[in-house]
Length: 438
Ligand code: NAD
Image (cartoon, rainbow, N blue to C red; front, side, top):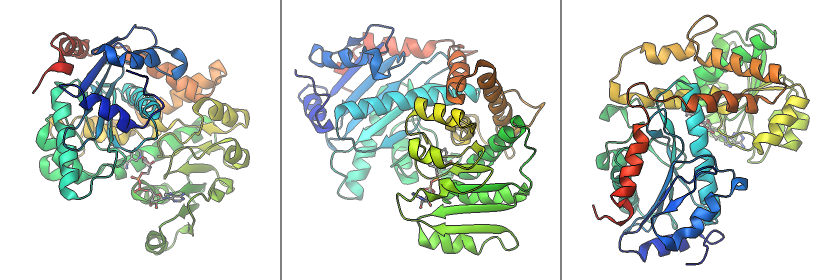
């Protein structure tokens, strides 16, 4: 079979559907371990994944399948699993090429592993992607796609645990959950933890406090904050910031209705809500102490960084740097302290990661993530301080410092299960997951 990397994902779906069972599995697909592919016709995948310049990092396995009814492409990307089963949300997204689909899954699963490790959660790094080709034409078609995805997750025997991510809704999670027990972030009425946005906002504010302390700039009282996006997380964050005594919040928001609603919500506080058009990045030029991206990723690039007038960059948005390495370095050279996204915004995964352990009001296992100095060593505050100090000591960007600390933590084996997750992967391989009918 020819290499399909530059083709649309539907070409990979067609190739998978030509098989008796529309699945293919890659084992040990990182830059270090040589890969094995379940079907020699897909050898080109192993070639791509073995190339270190493709930003692949020691992935233990990659599972691909096509939905026979939905014709959607499903991918489960399993990074290192020493700490436990691979955990990470499912992104329902379209990609132009097979290569961009693979790259995104590989990159996101590494990020999840680092996020879990720094949060001291006993999970490995995982991510799934549903690439639907054509958007499902109605509610039933959407349900079919998520049912097939749930069955795909079940077939992996728990090596990957799914959760909500971009393009998925609580209702989709409900459908997935009906077809696999390996799902978290399910709605509260099914015993899940519900919307984590308030906790995420609280966590980001903790990271801001750590960055200010690190720079010797005192606490949040009387500071000025600029933020892009005042949605779920942003609006809770505004509340938290005023509670902490912030003097002024300027927020840009593209949703006019939301602008009106928020403008009236905080009488007695200096909140300026600016209606922005998509693509308007003027908020990043606002004179302030902390600038915060709470909407989209990829917003800090050479152009915006040049204009940032804050001393700290810290927000909820995933992957806010357009180019992780170069832009982190640019911020460092300008003397701006960048708190890596997955350190500040961990509370989404923390909130849902232990749903199986039952729920407890004011759960100490959750609350400790908000501890301040002298509290739990892995709290958001203490992790942020450790990363910023490591970056200063080693004279490196904060992203490089957090990667170093996180990568060391991803190698720590699970205290009960050891590296059992990898045994599950090996068993799936031995027993012919890619050729078996459920
Ligand atoms: P949301 O969709 O509720 O809020 C985003 C807001 O940004 C919306 O109100 C939208 O209108 C606005 N927006 C979009 N583009 C904009 C632009 N160009 N300028 C100004 N405003 C713009 O999403 P959310 O749940 O608040 O999450 C925000 C970010 O944080 C996302 O990147 C998300 O991936 C990330 N995140 C969220 C959580 C969570 O718990 N919700 C956890 C981790 C990470």
